[in-house]
Image 1 (cartoon, rainbow, N blue to C red):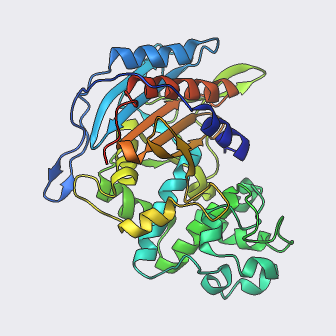
Image 2 (image 1 turned 90 degrees about the vertical axis):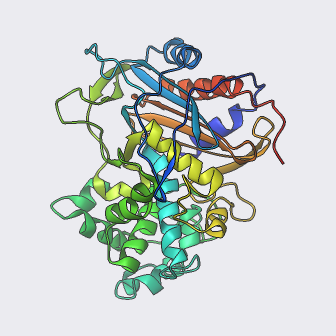
Length: 391
């Protein structure tokens, strides 16, 4: 997963001078109240391909990269360069599936927002209130930790635990519940007082939604987010069929050499970072975040979405987003990056310009993070973000 330093590094880099861009076609249309599934006929834009290729090969030689520019409800530019797997000649395709890592967090937070909309949870719901049968096993300071604190990384939790041990020999649901038994030591900081990036916090938030609804996180996010938005490619874990190159493989750095693999973090970590989907489907989620709806579908209330995009006082992290100010964004921007150490991806939203920029690479090395930043910078210039902001 991805840490605070890497997230803020990307957020700090992109104070950029913009350029010009173009349009290649519609992504979404409304049909009987639901968005159509995205087609695969959108052709890669050669200018975007040049941006991605420069980032992919600029002293790095990474396997493959996909990127997109989204304006309103259109993917206005799309590109894909490189290969699905080192050692194979299969080209990466614009509609291929990518792993989102910690960019899953904003999806988890949005799904939980729909549970809040139904009154089954509140932002101030505490671990003790949601898990009264297990609260006595928690350290007293953790009993008062709220859902809002979990989603803002302000609960005093460790970044990670031994996730494989939690799941070993158990069903995923039981592995997540066992996470509560790991909260007996004092918090690393008093809950509510200090930021500390934590995958543990997002798994606990997902667990609260599971308890409140009686459904698994996987079922909840399918029914409440992927289904309504028409994200047909969305799923969990590494993309593709084991042993086949029908989708891109991830690549981990071993001794400075990228090695292809199809592994992922354990499913118990799902709410913190195991979602995969195509960049076209990821664009649907970006549109929801910018507009509050996709093709007329509104799975979450506008006020709830605003709350999830608003950091806690004195902080910059909201519900799966870092909030910052950028001139090219016309003011407020939202961003996040994700990695399971075999993939890397970055998303930027500029709500005032109705603009989103998305990039994913099938490698998780430091060079991949730098390449994502470089590609996003090129897409900012391509998108013509110096145009006047609509008021």
